[in-house]
Image (cartoon, rainbow, N blue to C red):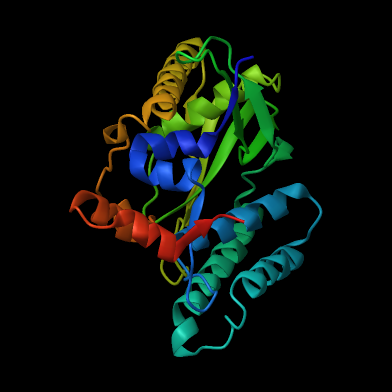
Length: 295
C-alpha cells in the first residue's frame, strides 16, 4: 500500500527558498532549546500578531477593542512581561506595540475609506487538506497538501477573492506573491471551495503611523484558466522534487542544499548547524545539544 506524504503549503515555499531550512524545520521537525525557556522575539512575530488581528476582525465575533485585547492576550502568553519596558523585553515591547498600532490604525482606515463595501467574508484561516492526483516518486506515494489560506471572500461584482495579509515596509504589487497565492487558489479549487476570480494581498505597513499615509493597500491579480494551468504546473514540479528528495536524501545528502541569503539573518533558527555542516564541523552534535523535536 502506497505511503501517504502530508505536505504543508508553507513547506513548499520553504523548500523553494532553502532546502536545508526545510529539512530541519519540516522533515526533522526541530526547534531550538532556549536557555531560559523563552524564545526570542523575531520580526516574524509582528506578522503573526497582525495576522491574528485581521483574522479576529473578519471573524465578525469581536469589536475593535476586543480584537486588541485578544492580541494583547497572545503577547502575554508568548512573551510574559512584555508590557514592562526593561532591557530584556525592549524588542518585544517595541514589536507588540507596533503590531497593535498597525491593527488599530488599519481598522480605522477600513471605516474611513469604506473599502470593505460589497464584500462578505466566506471564511478565515480554514484548514484545507487535498489529495493531489497523480503518482509521485518511485514509491508511488499518495500526496496530501494541507494549508490555511488567510481569507476567502465574495465580492458583489468580482466574485470569489482569495486574500493574503502581508506586513511590509513598502507597499508593492501582488506580483511578488503570485506563486504562493496561485498555489493556494489551486488547492482551494481541488478542495471544492470554488474557483477564485481574483488574488489579492492586503498589505499593511510596519509603521507607527506618525507620517502621512497610505498605510495599507490591496493590489490584486486576475485569476483565470491560464494562471490556474501555470499554478498547477509549478505545484506539480515542486511536489515531484520534494518527494524525490524525501526518497533519496538518506543516500544523497547533497540534495539538501542551503540557499544563503537575507533570510538567514531574520527568519532562520538553524544558522549554527547550517554553518557547521558546510565548514566540516560537528553539525549533528550542535543539533543534539541545542535543538529538540518540536512539541
